[in-house]
Amino acid sequence: MPESMQLVFAIVIMLIVLALFLLGVGWWMNRVCLKIIQELKNKGAVSETTAVTLPYAKTSYFRFGLRDYRPKALEALLINEVVDRTDNDQYYLNPEKLLEIYQQTIT
Image (cartoon, rainbow, N blue to C red; front, top):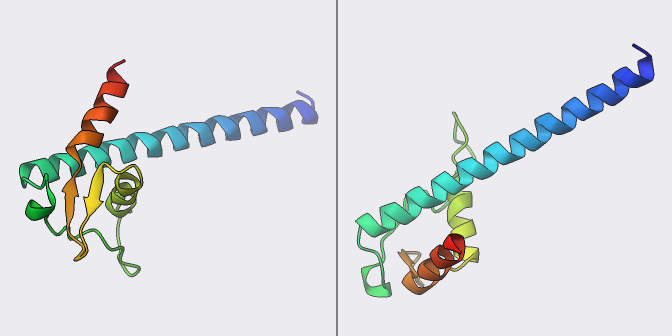
């Protein structure tokens, strides 16, 4: 096999591995977002008066072990307005936005 073909083959393999890695991280973030939503539902945090404090809301820079995706997933939920934050850093679900996103995924 010529050297140029080996180089092209190696680049294609690297791109495939990168795509699979990005798909895996996206899948994992989706699962973590669903777990956060379920946790807020189980705690009954559906309005500002029933908001709860989440222990993983702030990232720890000196944590050892596997990566914790919950702070980034919570940030994504806040950006998409599925979860809202009170003034004293408590979190609750936005049922209207959650229903809107759920209806978009069905259709």
